[in-house]
Every structure is written in structure tokens, then in C-alpha cells.
Length: 259
Image (cartoon, rainbow, N blue to C red; front, side, top):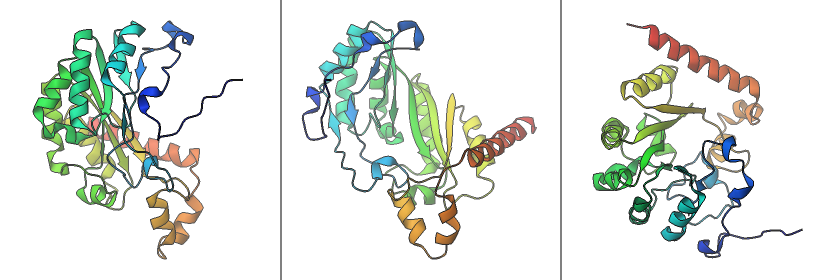
């Protein structure tokens, strides 16, 4: 049996392309899932990239390889599955130039600081970027600071979403609920902000940690005031997830019924 082995130290361009011919064309929205980069310039305390002992430098594939894969798969739509395609703005700009002649559409995950440069947002739209997944994480600056995420102030989120919309790019906003600076109203305020800023889609998750690995775990489990309370909750359970989803759904329904 042939076994593929690699690490994060070898040149990224040497990774073999995936065997897309093994996939059923009619079984997926698209078979063109692309990987251009690996890693992220952020190391948010709740993210698996902050796992203790994990060393994942930011790696970039040659933009010509990405364009060739997109072209050869023959699909009109592609999804870039990178952690954060916008970590290196100049690389993203080069990739957009390489994709533009293809006349296809695509989507990707980015961080909101891509909007620091409006010309870069325009460069994304011209070669067919129609949607982005953005990790806003929280509407509280204290939560962003505690997570050690490099991000604009939350008061600027709305105008940055508007910039993406103005360029024809839809926004799937990701939020984590249950940070230290959140209160019971976090459900309502988050849903209200999503609706007011007309996000096309939203992804909401519980604040959670990877057991014995990422910074949130180590901070909580060592603090004398929280260690006893958090130890019984280190294992994620379906019951907790269901309660979370019901609470979020109820708040969203209440908001929609209010005048």
C-alpha cells in the first residue's frame, strides 16, 4: 500500500494534486475544492492552530498551480478551503490576477482585515469572488483582545461588511458565543447585528476549547476560581449543544416577531 507522508517543512508546491476524478460530479455543489495556502497570521486562543506543540508556518502554493487546477477540473465554481486566504495580502492579489482569465466564480475564508485595503477587495471581486467566510468571532472588543486576534475594532465591522457588499461579495459571518465579556444578551445582540447588516449567512458556535491543548483550556483549568466549575465540562456533549441551539433559535424568532 502506498502511503503519502509529508510535513510542513517541504516546499508546498511539491504536494500532489487531489484525485478529483474519484468524486461523483453530481454528488457535490462543486468538486473544485482548492488549497492555496496553509496556516494563518493569527493564533486565536480558541483556534486549533493555537494547540500546544503545533507548528504550522504560513505556506503558499504557486498561484499558477491554483489556476491550473481550477481550469482543469472544468467546474464553474470553486471553493478555496484555506484557513485564511487573506493572511498575505500581496499573495492574494497575485492569486486574483492569475484567476481572472478563467472567468469562474469562487469563495474563500478570509479575516476582516482584508478590507483594510479597498483596492484588494475590488481585486477579489473582479476574478469572480462571490462570497467570503469571515471570522468576526465577537462584537465585544474585550473578547477579541483576550483571544489575541489581530482584528479591527468591532465598531468598524459594519462598514467593512458594506464594502464587501458594495463589491458584490456575500458574507458568511462566523461568531463564537460565550466569551468572558459576553452576557445573557449576547444571543439577541448578535442576531440583531447580523440582520441589520444583512449578512447572507451566519455561523454561530459555543466558546469551547480543545482539551489540554489550546490557551483557553490552560487559562481556565489553572485559575482557582474557575477550575472546579470547568472541569466537569471539558467534554463536549450533544445535550449542551442542543440547549445552545434552542436558545439561539428562540432569540432569533423573538427578534423577528418584535416590531
